[in-house]
Amino acid sequence: MKSDIVIVGGGIIGLYSAYLLALRGIKPTLIDRGDFGRESTWAAGGILTPLLPWDYPEKILFLTRNASSIYQNLAIKLLDDTGYDIEHWVCGLTVYSNQITYIKDWCNQNNVHYNNEDGYPPQIHLIDIAQLRTPILIKALVKQLQHLDVKLINNTSVTQCCIEQNKIVGIETSIGMINTSNLIWATGAWASIINPENIQPRTPVIEPIKGQMIALENCPVQLNSILFNDGHYLIPRKDGLILAGSTLENVGFENSITDAAKEILWKRSIEIMPELTTCNIAYHWAGLRPGSKNNIPTIGPHPDIEGLFYNIGHFRYGIAMAPKSCEILTNWILNDGHDLSELEKSYSQLN
Image (cartoon, rainbow, N blue to C red):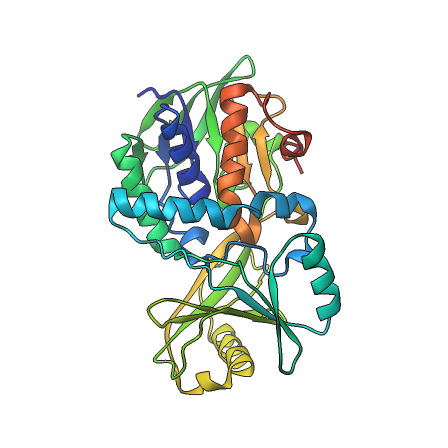
């Protein structure tokens, strides 16, 4: 088998990379060792911004700043082409905080729209914050890639990168050899351990961080905004479900759900919204986020191996970062990064 570009990793980063390349007339091959999007992407809440943006550096905010508008346009396109509604919803974000004055100053300096909210504890509502439903997004993107004739290969592992004279010439997989001169590594939380041994020494350091969430049903009140208080958040869905999350657990690749986490998430939800006491817990799940140094992803070419590209380490904000991250990577592949700003180029530095 031969392909101009092979993408390893079928989460949101791999899927969106394949989508952008296909729109430019390039038909990559997308490979995943399981089912597409079934790891951290599927588990994500789908909020299209860092939860407290004033706590993050510009290198993170830059990648997420236009995510909502991009997904809003994508939602229309995917609904027309695939029939899937990814439920992009500008529902806003209400933050409870004792730093309201500081937050308002930050919002004013960064042109972030907000409303003053009365009540205790002090709170502020960020008007333009949006969300989407990630499981539906995955289904829609897979269907769209099929329409675009992208080759999709699931349940297939990569065993080795084939390198000659410091150039990618192919990969060995569990179904055989694929010849390629361009390889995108988008393997999420597994980037470090499933990275082929022959390029291991120059791989960004990625570690799995488990997050557990619950979904509440039969809620007696309708929630129309994301709520955040002291590390815990509630996300309303259009069908009435309310998602509550999430834990941050550095426990390696252990990905099971626990009763202790469920109890904590339940209690914290009721603290924020006492009306949820009568709700039922409909779902409880966990996902492994790709933790990276300072939460900043690595996006760009490998410094020593021609044709090898990284797009990994997006931690909690892979959904929000995906459009800009994949745009940057596409420019590296097609234009050798010539059209990128210095900030965009800086993501290529291995952490």
